[in-house]
Length: 220
Image 1 (cartoon, rainbow, N blue to C red):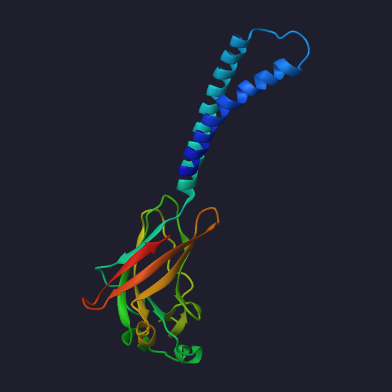
Image 2: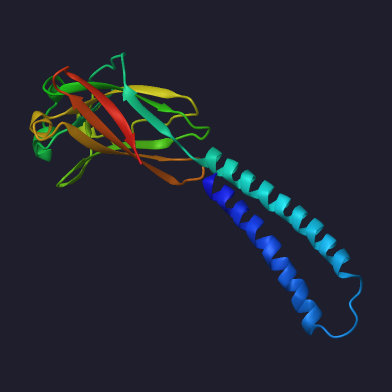
């Protein structure tokens, strides 16, 4: 909306300055007698520029509204509800892949601290293929999750598909060796909208060690 307002202001400044110059150039360089008077042409140009400006303003506002509707916005917040650990937990660990895959009882879910979270789609667009990645110095870390149907941990590629205003409760679990490195952890929240566009959001998990609490802060 800010860009649209700036474009309208620029047009308001340019139109009164440019049209008189065009009229002067016409009088100076076009041969023959001018049809109508200067006042008449100025009145015509004023009415024409006013209508043109109104059209451009309406179009820019329309495009701004459309882009807002096309945008997908997810909100990640701490949850008072608890999800079932073995069904809805994202486990971030630096253990070797072989060791994580060999855990056939989902024991990692009982070893790491649990952060209850609610993910809500607060936009008018739907969000598919929602992913959460933990940003470490070594790179982006994908989560694991215990799948009781195959009785082993698998890479958790998608949290959910969320319709407008739909929410999902799940757990985030981070291994102790990662938690010991800092009090803030950055995540990348990815999703795809109905137009197939990938939307990337930045979220920071802030630990309140003294109060044993935590918050999620969305960043630009």
